[in-house]
Amino acid sequence: MNEIVLDASAVLAVIQNERGAEKLTASVLGNAVISTVNLAEVQSKLVKNGYSPTQGWQDALRLVPSVQSFTANHARIAGDLIATTERFGLSLGDRSCLALAIALNAPVYTTEQTWKNLQVGVQIHVIR
Image (tube, rainbow, N blue to C red; front, side):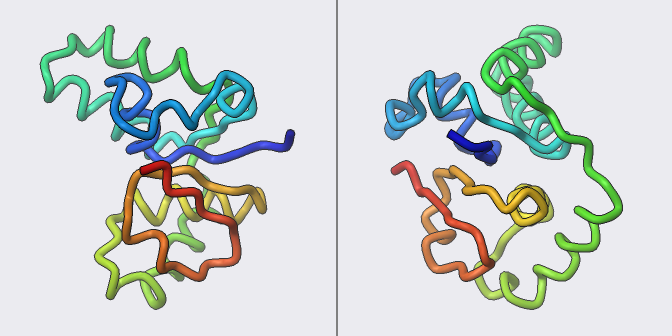
């Protein structure tokens, strides 16, 4: 299996054992990559929900074997995406995730229902 990109919402679903997490099996997660932007988003949400910063960081990192730095190329793609995604209300974090998927030409996994309507050149799997 090739690399897959995880949105922060998908990682949080697994950590918090939410509906849809069962779709992210060990074999899928074994090929997962996440952007540093989305990794920060995961940790931030865990800390906001009562995790210590250290525990939030460790829990986020244990699920994703590869972390990709947010590069100038990713920033350009995320910026370009505003033209086609603004009407769907995507955040910078959302567009950062999609930018990594586009740069890697890899499918992306998310819990965000609005992503079903996106046409950005990569396959999008909405897990719930």
